[in-house]
Length: 105
Ligand code: F3S
Ligand code: F3S
Image (cartoon, rainbow, N blue to C red; front, side, top):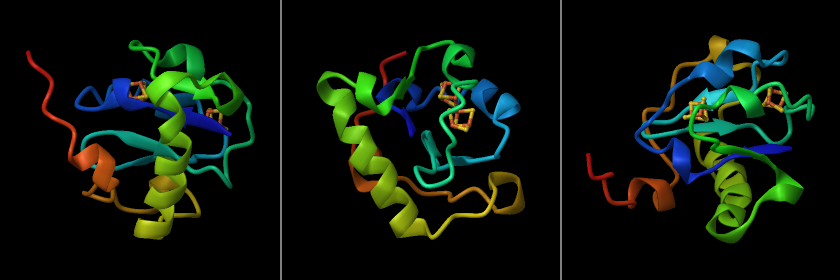
């Protein structure tokens, strides 16, 4: 699966959503999450993110590695599945994401 990492937090550019052929990128509150069981590894989203938040799971490094687990737990927590455009945004984040300090602007 591809994985969205913390660079997305409070950016939420959403450009990644536009090209996903299986509609598996779901909105939390502060970031978006790729459903690991629905992503078909097409890779279309990766170059579309202006802040390079998206990685193939094997390419995750450093703190980004945690986001593979974050995504799995987010979908277990919210039950979101079956297509992002057919479901409402979660309006919540994984606890690790919710606890991140707001980015200095
Ligand atoms: Fe969609 Fe990106 Fe996976 S475009 S299928 S989430 S690699
Ligand atoms: Fe986030 Fe980048 Fe998508 S900032 S919403 S992963 S385009």
